[in-house]
Image (cartoon, rainbow, N blue to C red; front, side):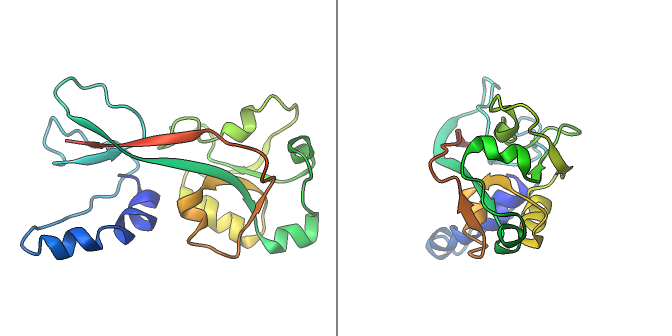
Length: 171
């Protein structure tokens, strides 16, 4: 699974499994690149896009929700946008297009149809986006599981619903 999901959600939610199966050897391989299960690169995987390989068994896992967040430092300096249209007057942080994001449509905020929504910085890492948010660079849409790890972040534009993303347990 991805670095961010494995570090912030999965590693915090495997305790019961570890206690119930003490003889089971568990190795979490965190990568933003999809490992090939058919080639034996991993035994199981968590995917954020529906796998297409016919020989794999796919089970729904959880639905990941994204919302828009900013730090108190950014809000103090630049204010809180009152509408989604106000975002064109704010610093946006995005994943960018240099490499494919681990979650399809991760930069949904940039495709809302509002002209002039451009990021001030593109960071091809969820950890990097989280760090930029915390430092007060700007505003970003991040998964709620990641935002929960940083309670100082402030959810803004609460009425704006982002796309949700399904995750799958694949073996």
